[in-house]
Length: 545
Image (cartoon, rainbow, N blue to C red; front, side, top):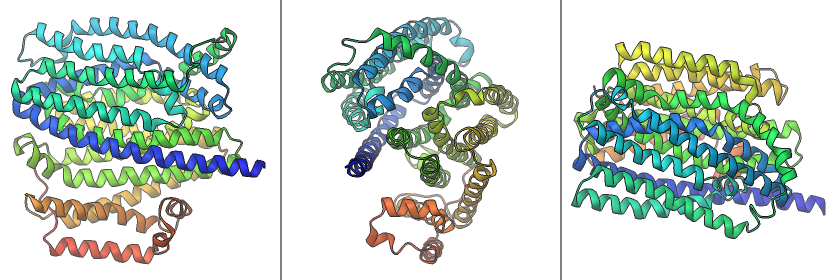
């Protein structure tokens, strides 16, 4: 009977992964297409200058999200077990504590945002609008951020309960409706302020609908809360927040200061140019984060279901390879397709150097690889172990970025992020090896360097094929996109086809009728065929600028 129940739980976990992944992917792809449509109309009607302001505002609000203190991460990690054990009283206590703290944080963020508004002209020294209007635009951004602390906290519950598909569906529908209105407004009477108000409304509407869903699905939430349980969890959550806080600082500085530094030293217009590229990496990151967050809830449930340490480590290895495949695929496609895409869609005047595309792609791969150890840190509550490393690497990131931005421009800032991301990645795997799975650190070093070597091979093979082509126009872009995508899949698949993790993933994710044909020789032959086909059709494009 127990064995049957455990089998049912495994089937349930697998089913929830597929549901969450499929809906997350379809909704995010849908939002990506809409996002590009909105961006195109935005540039045509309002111009590039507002892109720079928008990019800097977004970075500032990312910095303000530091006030979250990692509470969402802390509460999520504590929700896995009571949800797995169906302990409603403990879930109620955690959500009540979560709400109380977030109400206070909303006020703190508002106050800090108001203070920052008085120094905006120093952050954006090349403004072409009045300072008063700039502050007004910033306050609209700020209002959207503050509102999330009062409305969005219930998302944590449905994500921890492996129902992230609900949030994705609601977000997708809201995005469709509001984006359509934004496009109409921009075409009829372009107004950046109205555009921003609609952006804020988009998030508020999604959060309200999700909150109503939670009230209906979990009717007893925040009712008849046991104050003793709140008192029990409070010191644990507070301690965990202290541990997570330094990590939050690192994440915000790594990914939330680039546009600010570029704006201060090189002007907001260049930050606007970069935003066309980061729009793409941002959408890719959202898609992968959604996919991985869908898996994380199931992973957390798996960890809290009594599996051995060895089983947990093997499952972590499998997830890490899945992370790597997604990150490497996106990196290769981004590096070799973003230049012609920006030229075709936004205009050649908005192009940045090819080297910038390379650094953005490499940093995206590192960001994806870091997500797996971050998930493990969340589930096992390990954040206290990397505080010294995060502090040092955070300061180093700012120092290198400021030092190099004067000489190398955007590339200098991206190099700073690259160096400190490596420190971030290796330090976290050291903590996982030592404190969780009790294995030699070389175990993870070998895996990481193996994946780096495969990525380097993927890059050089693709670069060799596509370096001498002409500028891509029309249908030829689609052909090249297909060839690059195939190489981004086949090259790492060929190199890693004999690993245990690859075999596990193909068995789980690919139908048996197809997986039986996936052999190293078959993959290698397919790779050679794609390379030959790409060369025959005149593959590639000339690296622009």
